[in-house]
Length: 79
Image (tube, rainbow, N blue to C red; front, side):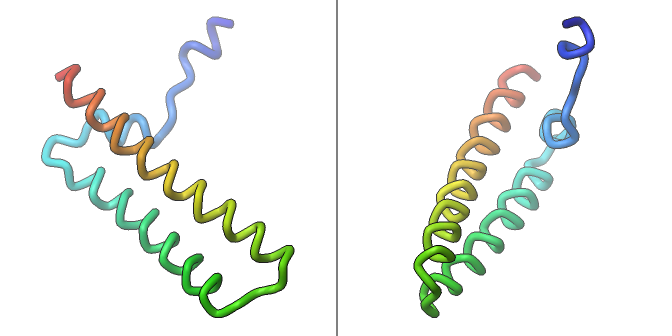
């Protein structure tokens, strides 16, 4: 159990060390860019199975953006 407690993710470290918000902005831009690409594929029309997969991916990317925002705010309060 102690090993689990010491695990740190690269994303967490990047956000903790983000002094000016540039790392958060870069992460959010990467997620947004991927989300836009997924949306374009959806808008182009895809098979039903692919549609379901891409819709879930689009929602997951939105959740990831919200998580990054929340984590960045949390780490900023700790400084």
